[in-house]
Image (cartoon, rainbow, N blue to C red; front, side, top):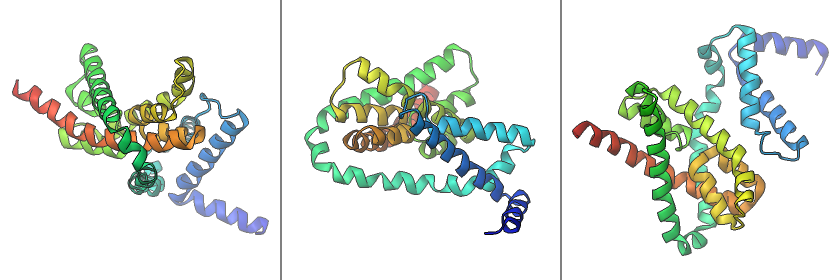
Length: 242
């Protein structure tokens, strides 16, 4: 490719929404590079780093979020197939999961209920609007699921997505040092807890630590998505009745 071709490519991208798709991919690659250079440190989460870089680009360019989303919606579309693809590690670890089904189900119910009640309770304590409370209640479910739940109960889908992403980033950043500190050595327990609380971002981080942790994280994420989708609407329905 000649210099003229490169220049023409930049001119074309600058005049179309594809510019934001291109920038999103570049920022994420930079985030991955920083994480690798840091020795995969927990603080160097590529999602958090790329989000910060993209926010700076959007602010500096004066673009709106709608303009950014118009170019990056293809990545948003891929969220759904990505969640479905997590059935693959679940299938590979199914025999192991069946043997640990009872403790997993207990941890699933307790973890999901506590995550929902903490979000809703803190929101009530700070006097937040009911629409906002409904938006952040499914924060521990993966973003596509959280958005669907929020929409079904009258929340704001974009706020649900943001709260889910923030939850995932914080969980993925804190999980490894916290679990090391607590001396959790079972990769199944570590992975399941991370996937349950930090969904896709935590699951991606778990796969970089250990394959068994990654597989169980995907199990925790999938099961918590289903559980949260059942519990959150039921909670607000009961609240409206009583």
